[in-house]
Image (tube, one colour):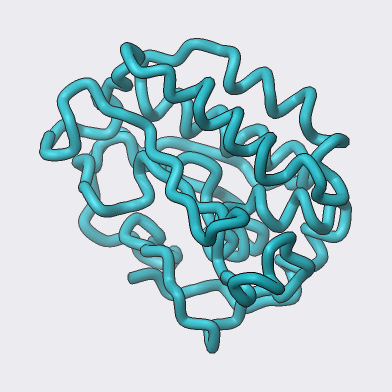
Length: 200
């Protein structure tokens, strides 16, 4: 999943290893090719277009991005437009912009680049490994493959300064980018204070 949600990172910072499943099949209506932010007009979904559309049943490792659309340009312009006035965007902008100027063929490549970049900003030491064979269930692990963007404000999410909160109220569990641009170095501490989700 690109630039995973706050709930995903709450689980990640409490784990020794993050296992990315390259063998699972792509599922539409999931986080696998989209991430969520909020702007002046409310929540925004940033979707990565796929070469064979969202109905495909390929393994994640084989899902190709449709680069005929200038999605990276559009995503970057949206992020700049939304977050240019946030407290820490300017600090993270140069490194993040490189991801949107680098060509990617596979969805899994872009997703990994986004996760690695966020992991670096958090100074997180957690290892990342890959599952090359599909398992329906993992023992002794928090399975976040089917995690959805919950709008449940009663869940244990960090509450922080959000640029457009006075217009739309606080929107929980967006992409970690939203929290990072608002809280900067405090992001890791805020994640560590919360209970990991159970998935689903």
